[in-house]
Amino acid sequence: MEGNGASAWRNISFGCHFDLTVSASARLLLICSHSLGVIMGSIVWQDTIIYLSFLACIAGLVLVFAFRRTAPSELEQVDEGLFAMIFAFWIVYCATVIVVRLDWLESEWIVRSLRLTSALSYFLTWASVLSLPLHRIAAVREIE
Image (cartoon, rainbow, N blue to C red; front, side, top):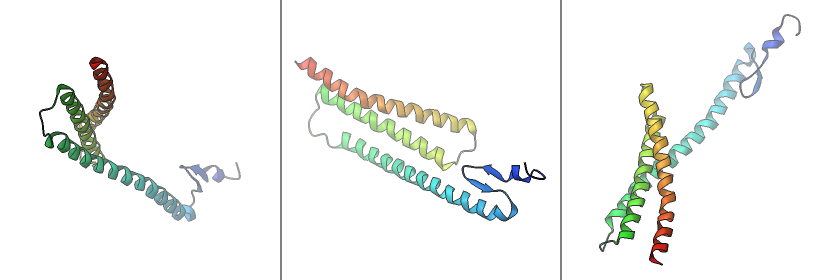
């Protein structure tokens, strides 16, 4: 420590090194706002992907159910059901993530329940994605 101990307070790390003096307060504001801009840019990109996948899942549900020309077989019915579950679970995931990120809700227990809902729908989505090829493999073996 030098002199009156001022150097102990000069270098405090907040993810970057800078001096916390009165003259350095402007640099602190500039550095922190720049780093927030990078973080906010990635959040905006992730939100855009979530919005687009939400719209794509709605289009996927329309495609699964709207363009049926003939009566589907049992295998096709199961496949349609699995695709519908995948799209529906992902819609629920996207909706809960969007609501939580918009930060409209003030109640902590509602936010926690939405986060739990998004986690469950995420896992159910991937369980349905994994069960689709497994069902096709089982159907092919059953035919043989």
